[in-house]
Amino acid sequence: MQEPEIKPVVTAGRDVNDMKHRDIRFLNFLYLRGPNIWTYHSVLEAWVDIGELEDSPSNTLPGFVDRLCAWLPSLAEHRCSYGEPGGFIRRLHEGTWTGHILEHITLELQNLAGIPGGFGKAREAGPRGVYKVVVSAPNEVATRASMEAARLLVLAAITGSSFDVEATLLGLRALALQHLLEPDAACIVAAATAKDRGIPAIRLSTGNLVQLGYGARQRRIWSTQTDRTGAIAHGIARYPELTRTLLKSCGLPVAEPDESHSHDVSGNHRLLVIGGQMVAAARIDTGLAPVDVTDEVHPETAKAVRLAARVLDLDIVGVDVLADDIRIPLAKQDGVITAMHACPGLTLHLQSNKGEPRPVGRAIVDHLFPNHDNGRIPVVGITGSSGTSEVAQLVAELLRLSGKFIGLACCDGMFLDRRKVEIGDCGNWKYATRVLMNRAVEAAILENGADVILGQGLAYDRCEVGVVTRINPASHYGRFHIEEPEMVSQIFRTQVDVVLPDGVAVLHAADPMVAELSRYCDGEVIFFAIDPSSPVITQHRASGARVVFVREDKLILATGSNESSLMALSAIPLMIENPDHEIMENILAAVGAAWALGIPHHVIQTGIMTFSYDADEATQVFDQSPVFN
Image (cartoon, rainbow, N blue to C red):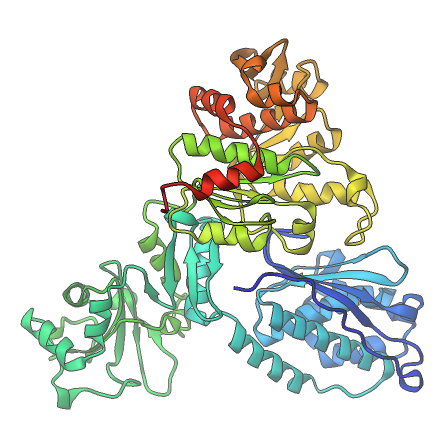
């Protein structure tokens, strides 16, 4: 995997004669790989200067709309702001600007090229004529090529030049085949990440190796092989004669070598076994589309292929069966097993010309994650204008004391348990992803600054706990075209948006901008503040919800009217060393996060009493940890 980076400026020179001073220039590209200020999924954000076209909406360009519709008639399906097919065409006739048009053309080219997606936004970025154009981007290379092609198409439609749509789509389809997941892996990932399963996915290579789940609870697939597919079993399946011998020794009917057919027509049926169950079957007729026959397979035949899978010890296997009628037991028609495939294709069962496609991707996901397991570990995301590293370190210490092997990526470095494995600023997408990939990690604490959210996106799809410390809008102005408080609020809202429905947002009650974010949380909210009489604290308690605050010399945890004194402030070394309000707020935020994670009060108390934040000292202590030495 490559670290996200801000791409260099890409400009297009103006041809005064042909373009009449009208041009579209790409000023910058950002590939946001995870949840961001726009949406929950990866997007490409382009900063686009439309120059003098700002004075020329679509309805002022002679022949422009007609040319677009002739080249891309499927634009008629775009709903746009009207929420119905034809909405975008209506906007074109009424008059809309080139940034918005570029968004829709990019999305349509991607759709026609087989690049999944559908999300798009176009927003003015500040300077006149400059827009942020944002589109779904399952892959940076393919989507950037689509947007660059869309630019050329739009300019050709403006000037009345020719444009070869089919050649463009041919090139984009080739890029899609080269860079996107192949259909089998994509089918499994789609089933895993579907809303009713909610299993996160991380692509581990440019091929079809994908991690499902996080940290210690992850599983891996490589196309239709899984981390449960044994090397010996896979090796056996590569040798047809050995496979036949083993199957025959268990009483299964197998084809003799001279009876076997080629791979394409080896058996006129392919039966798919996943986790010991036959989940799909297709009849294969040469030159025709496969026909789904899952419901027609005789129980004895299904039993035979399940046994064949067990004999080879394959968790996922395609079994080719030669039979005149799949509804009749093999023994009554001289039916035989002709081949076993350790990495079976799923397309046969997804593109049947009879009935609905079989949910084979879901069957593989349920096999890997039974009993509604979602493969998640506790993930704590921490953001804000200040104090985030201190809170991250303290939450990590409390999780360690609770018995978890932790992974921490923050501005102070990357830590695995008590060992600092990377120095420097690691509070970004690259190092957070490394934490989530580590099979030893049982809980992840990930710091995300505003620039990371704006320029890279979050490394995780959802989190159990999201912490927002405090927001200083002025400290974020001037970068990424952020110039207003509302835009700053949108940045930090991203962290609250990704809190799971059964998770918790831990928010600063005394910061109005932070407190306002509570309405975007799908889960519970814990407010923290030094002052127990804060209106937000008072109102939250009145609703029976949880709060953390200080009264006199005590750190208090309260649920509604029920209070629990955690400890005296005089017993907290951090407060003795630096009795600063901001330090106290950081402690309250960390305590709120630990409480949200269900860490026992006595463990929280012990951690707060023994913790001392010193990045340089911590480096020496962690490097000497016996865990890895």
